[in-house]
Image 1 (cartoon, helix red, strand yellow):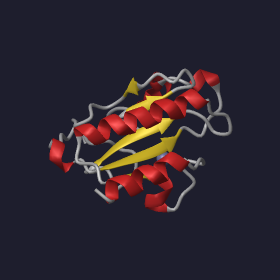
Image 2: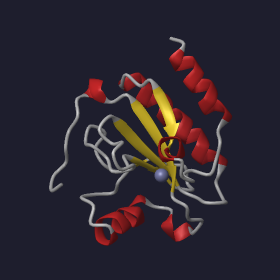
Image 3: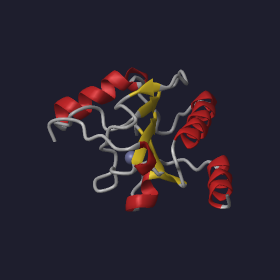
Image 4: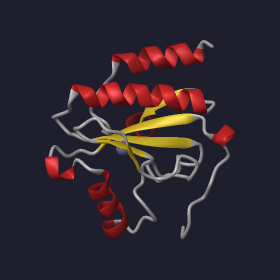
Length: 142
Ligand SMILES: [Zn+2]
């Protein structure tokens, strides 16, 4: 892939949540993750659409309509969000994650917000959010 592949708004139906698997405060910025992906993995850009560092700010990665690279074979219809941390997370990160998920559900026909591990059975992320379960039950019942 040498340039972004753009989707139509109506084709974006799922959100995928990741963690950075690093507790290093120096890694708590999307520019660091972008360098890993672009320099070390030869990606076009950072794999995610959003990154939430310890500060709780919402940092923008790929444009929302551009296809991400968060999960191989699972990028065409998804928006990828990565929360910084491994064993150490800050409450503000999850508050901001929730507001981001809610905002994206207003803007796109989202039917599900998944953890990366739900797709491939891996370990990403290592947290479980009670509100996410409720959130999925709510959007699936509407
Ligand atoms: Zn992941």
